[in-house]
Length: 53
Image (cartoon, rainbow, N blue to C red):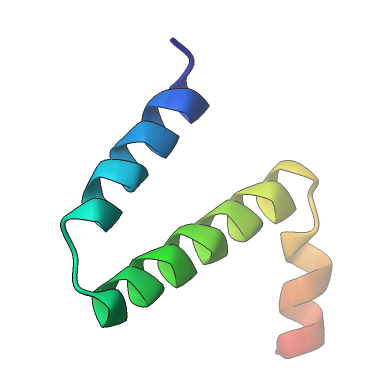
């Protein structure tokens, strides 16, 4: 099983046991982490930091 599939399964298990408000928060954090990871892999964090700084 790949890491991405394992993380997806783990996130699904967490979401099933959470109240709806906490679910939204967990999904938002997960998506933000995925987006930052993709930006870092593509080398976009430097230009983004200059834009925001």
